[in-house]
Amino acid sequence: MSTESSTGSSTGSYAIVTLGCPKNQVDSDKLEGSLATTGMVPADEVETADVVVVNTCSFIEEAREESVETILTVAQQRKAGARLVVTGCMAERYGDELAAELPEIDHLAPFGMSLAPAVTGVSGRDSEGQKVGPAAVPVALGATRGSAQRVPDFDLLNLPRPAAQRPWAYVKIAEGCDRVCGFCAIPSFRGPQRSRTIEQIMSEVEQLAAQEIVLVAQDLAAYGRDQGVGKRSIVELVRAAATAVERVRLLYLYPSDLSDALIDTICETGVPYFDLSLQHVSPRLLRGMRRWGNGEKFLDRIGTIRNSEPGAALRSNFIVGYPGETEADHDQLLEFIEQAKLDWCGFFAYSEEEGTHAASLDHKVDPELIADRLCELSELQDAITATKRDELIGSEVEVLVDEPGIGRSYREAPEIDGIISVPQTLEVGTIQTLTVSAAIGPDLEAL
Image (cartoon, rainbow, N blue to C red; front, side):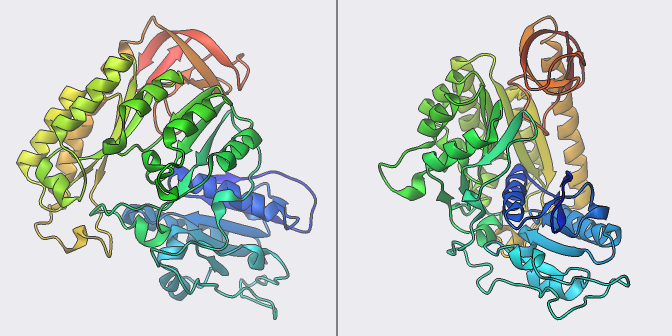
């Protein structure tokens, strides 16, 4: 969870609390730019803001629970008269339920709805916490919420955003998704894929003025496909971005779209970091997930990457306990993890999502068995990661200093991987050549 804050004088102030993935953080940055146009400024903290915006996540049950808990916590923390606005995935997907169950919310803003009505000309709440005034904010639900073919009139993709407050920044290059993965409900409320133009993206990159740009999307490698045959691709975008910033990093690459050209282009940028969306390796289970591939094909692509750049860093995520997952499927995944020796892995318990193909499947896996499998996989991967980090001791690394005493090389994506502890005296935002002196689990020390 992150909160934007600052000070200044204006007709009002706001705070944004962000939950979920990097794509949500980009949306919050865009919302901040939108709120700034109303004359508002960021508050020091939630407790002093006139308007508090909670940008929610609803990807899995755990994320939904965190979103509801955060809404309730913010409702208690806000000052008298402050307004609570809820946006993001939960507002889009479960707006009716939120409106009925959480009277603490003053305004619901699904995708495609401006926050302007929530922050202008509104009386808000009195000292007793009751909605007051003839202009009290209505619960604003989008009539077309949930339509997979809708493209909102008010699209966050191309709104301006402030300059990066850190040496790195996420940049969303597309919204929505055209895939039909059995476990994922995102296309039902994020809509179909719609890519931005390279010109729009590069304009934002220049505006951010960051040393590292992290490109994100629901289906990153499919960038530009929705614009028709002959339109520019992810390869051209990566090359363009690499001419403007020191580092370009890509998150969430669907394995079937990881072409040789894209592999070579990523390696040429000097950031050979590959975040592959694999989800499992059992052919039978992947068919049930409506996904491409199998362990053998994945190992082949990983081998191609390492042939192109032996020092490439690789990350992936895997779902554990998908309906019908057998012990044999689990053993295949364990064997793959041992063979692939990825730098980083995330393992997540399957979460049943309403309206998905997987929700209709039989042979649910017992939660205790899922927990056991998660533990076994995590222990195996932790040992692999620790070994790979130990192997770096004594080597030179180019470190981007993110904050005093903390940096990252190309091997570490911000917020999700390990870090490198560096001397406190190094200037934030600079890239330093250092020597790795120690490894502590996933983290390194360098001097």
